Length: 303
Image 1 (cartoon, one colour):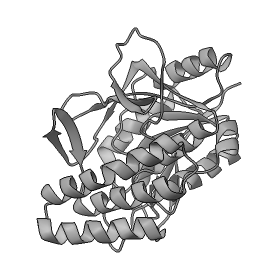
Image 2: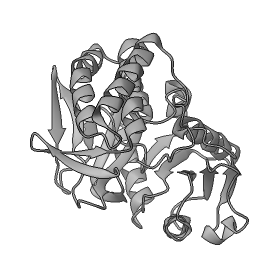
Image 3: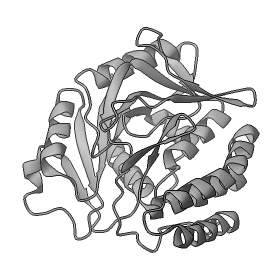
Image 4: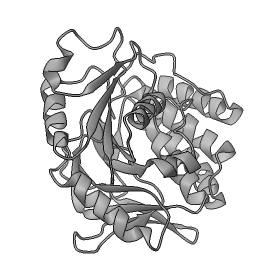
């Protein structure tokens, strides 16, 4: 039988919101594992946030390592699947049953590595478009609820249901990226191995996608802190150069790098010239393969 264990990664979480997130999960999963990246560990009243097993790292290890720790604990708890969630995601009551059903229906025709819901941003109310390459063109899909499961190239980690046998084959999440592009790299790696990634548009997950939502060329772009932009650039280049992903995605990331540099410098909160220098340094780190935590690893992992 399917045994789903939820893995939530937290960093200085809002206790009330976390308790609400855990409460929504209890009836849907066999267990909840909270992996806390807060410096010094969770406060003494952490249990007040709701039932769940806590792994207190005592420092910010980044999203990839925290997720891998949670997945390892889920294995020890006898999980067949893991549900990855961020601390600011609120799962609907039917999230796990719906994703399991979608996974089961697709399993006869595809080797499915992951299935997730549509993500709806709590600030803008907009859903995140689904990304899929068609030939050499990137398509941004917005399916209706009745369209059935949609194959995509990647999806956000939060809300993603992953069979453990897929993790065994594809491998763990990248820890040296620290944060940003961790979920993208894992999905593209799985796609390169022939796995299918699905989104069930009939299920929605409320999620806080970034500190700011900006409009660019008719699209909504979600922007985090300045240091997050540097990691986005660094990890995108590292992924394009070294990750086992399709050639079209390597080229896509190379072509987008100048746009990333210009955009993130233009919208910087800490000064454009200063950010431009940081971005160029981050780009060189990506080319040279210098990864790991940024200098300000104590900063929030909040998207």
